[in-house]
Image (tube, rainbow, N blue to C red; front, top):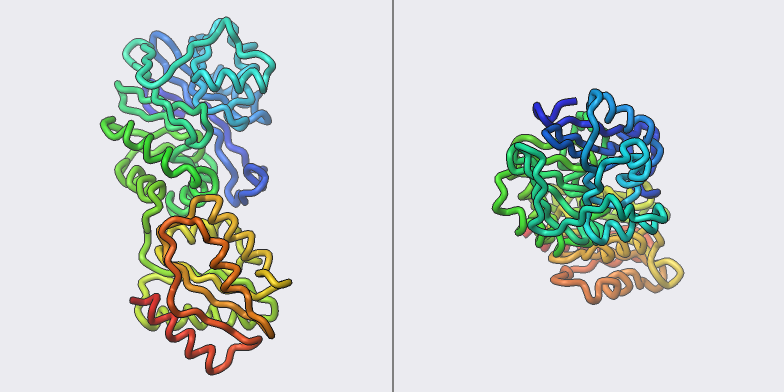
Length: 386
């Protein structure tokens, strides 16, 4: 598959994997991308997951058409991209391996060798000339592993971006919801904790003229590049992407659900531009985390449970904290038959979080939704709709 006259796609699609990294649901599979740059010298950009070694080598040989690669550039050592490095060296013993110093340390842990006779260690500002094509290396520590490098090919203005700008789904999957939805879920699920590192990377590549982004997951991006970079800037600086309210709830006997749905109804009636609502016990947790970061305001509605809060809500807040949730306004709805504690517990869980503001109006349900509950919901809706 051609990316350009000189750059070919030699990756693979995994259509059978149900959970990426053992936790992220894959409704449309996953791509493990690898690329080939043909010039006087030939560079292969990354390998693929261990289950696809035969397919990858077959793709490579078909694209090489009898030629031999000179380099394997290893941008990221996570095993879905690095598992076939040793296999590559067996198939192409004369090729060199180009990677960061940390990547070679991880290689030794994975393969019991760091391929000392093949090493080319690169860092910020390192260059590798292939002929007409020039590879310019950029370190990207903690985006999202410490050894990561990215590669800017300055002749065709292509950024090989490692895991950045990736998304769930196969290489050619035509996502009906567009690139943003699954890319956002991917970003906040996998990269989201490392916003400062992503911001540092964006500063490094700000001067690059980029016509194409070739990530290690998902489709190649070759138009409207500024749109994707701007989204990464918003996400990594924890700014609000969409004006609206996300309501996340758990409910045992349906009363907390009733309150959450009533609040959504009130917000829509008051002109709130966007309202999203999710049952944390029944919806994909990564989708819920994505929406929490997307919107500027969030409402957490749950029951007091064993003197604490309902487990799905507790898990959800832990996910938010783990991803550095910040710069948001939070409304609280609690339910408790005799001693409501949920609001107090949820508030305490955000201690230490940056720029978190709680709504002045809290809603307390005593078992069932009644007239006083509706009055409290009205006040909370007024505050959130401002």
